[in-house]
Length: 306
Image 1 (tube, rainbow, N blue to C red):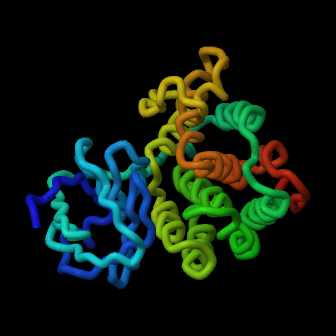
Image 2: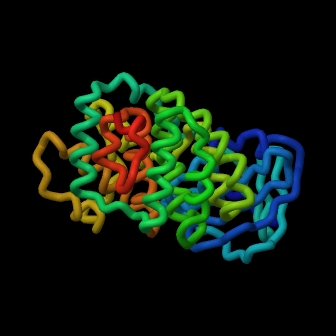
């Protein structure tokens, strides 16, 4: 093997990286990221990612000059002792980074949250199909009155194509936002999602949902929640001239930060960003019942909309 490649690893997967040597296997591979299943009790998933890739909470990020190796699902490797051995190459952790874990959104004035909801719902389309919207309605209604969310969760998990189906992205966005709000509904939703996901969706999506249940997310989602909560600096990672940014162009100066943050999030994945953003709206509907009628399409339990 040649000289080790330096990587920056997420502290969320530190135990798997620095612990004893364990087998890993490629779950999915693309030009910018490879997802790896670690053979441990925690079902840890790692993402060996290019520097330009979306930085998911389990990412092990390559140097900007390094390319993601071309591997196929099922390829074996090892991880432990601060290194990842894969496809004949060694990747050694030389730096650590901490994935965003938004907090404090519950302290934002309700009027500010309501204004953000109105702005976003007018400009960003609901990415779910009719069955998915009905599942969201049931989910919001159940959690708003303290009932079990299992039915809505089961109908959203795995809904849509790809490594992270749209229904999963909605649940992930809702989990992160509810945690940031400090909402009591975060715990039962997290329990329902983490229990059902392994048998209901892809292994990659189930792993990312476990991170979302802990409040961990991609930087673009953290920026959106910051913009909603206090209008502080956000979307520093938005790409100028991107298609998603142009969709939200033309807003006035007061909503500029929110527009940039929403544009950056919508640019994540093929449709993952739209699902995450809609999940934020779903969480706000759960935590603030008066906002539900502006977000939920379809029947809602009367007690939840009161």
